[in-house]
Image 1 (cartoon, rainbow, N blue to C red):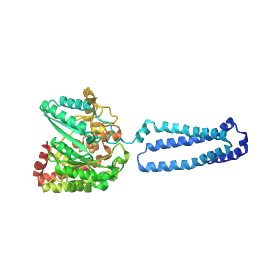
Image 2 (tube, rainbow, N blue to C red):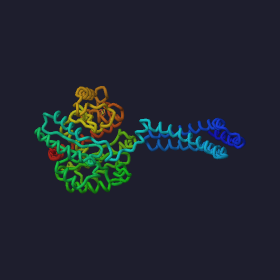
Image 3 (cartoon, rainbow, N blue to C red):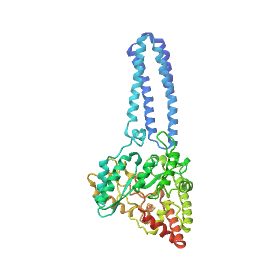
Image 4 (cartoon, rainbow, N blue to C red):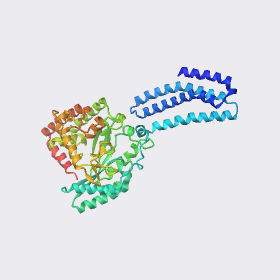
Length: 483
Ligand code: SF4
């Protein structure tokens, strides 16, 4: 670079000598190497930008920026020499116009190259801003109706069916939810069934009218909230970047004051920086008044920056065990402290659950996306795992059956000898798929933590069973019986 820079300055000197005898050919010959240099600089910019767009951690991005910055400084010297050389060629209007033409070419070619690279599918996906909640892709009414009809058909032998609204922000499409609810209640009644409705929301769009309407239809509500302001606002922001805590907390207070039909729970997404389980639970349960609080540690999400590393994961589970000890203390006094992960573990242990499969995905539950495709669960919507049919043609049972059969066979996947196999059964399909590209892969990145968590639960269960077994009859059986 420095040598080329030097050559440009030499050329500048020569140009001063020969500017009286310039022709287009002379200019072309003179400028070609310079143009080539400039193209290379712009190309390196494009490659650097494309590379940056694929990075996910702040450290990598800062390192890549510093390299790009260094390249820019080196390249800047040459560009400056080109400009100054060019100025020396201006003797009259004609030469000015010619130079302008060259400069335009110099700008336009790299521009097209930059665009070409920036719009490759991989970089384009990174550059795209997420759609505003009310501008995202939406499900049509007919797709929702077909989905519910498929549910009724597949659940012919059952007297209850569950309809869950999840993903994106359901409250941003209330027109559809109201219409589908009305349809589902009517059709379920025609078939002699009860439909159980649930919805997970970030609460930002809740209004008094909506609270009343949801209550009247006995929706099971879960609010996505990450704790006190400082933690909640880390990841939950408006499209403009402002934290949503104040709005959400005010709406949640109103909701909890008025909602009567069913208990309302909070769902916390644990990510780097949002790991103080005790403080989060205290705020949501005691200060805001949720009935129960569940924690979802993110270990294999689509965005690497949101995934907890091993140290953070260990910190999260240490917090969960501490909260589990509070749960135990309360249970011995006959109270449920609303820590839903622990309560679920106690439920599994009391009921003697022996899971052959990790969860109900694909068994009693499928998730319908906005195009009507049938996914294993809501987490797989939009993923590249092939779907299992669609609402128009029905469930692709041979494919789904083959998938579940494969999942049942965990013997060669190192779960065979695991002591918590009957409770974990291989872990979340989506975690495995996101992390290892295979939904059947055991969640090895936190097997030890899971085993420790289940051992901890068994100890707590034994103490409660010994010292206050009534806790289970009072708090677990009624929970199962919740409408
Ligand atoms: S903890 Fe790991 S090895 Fe054990 S059952 Fe779960 S995924 Fe399999």
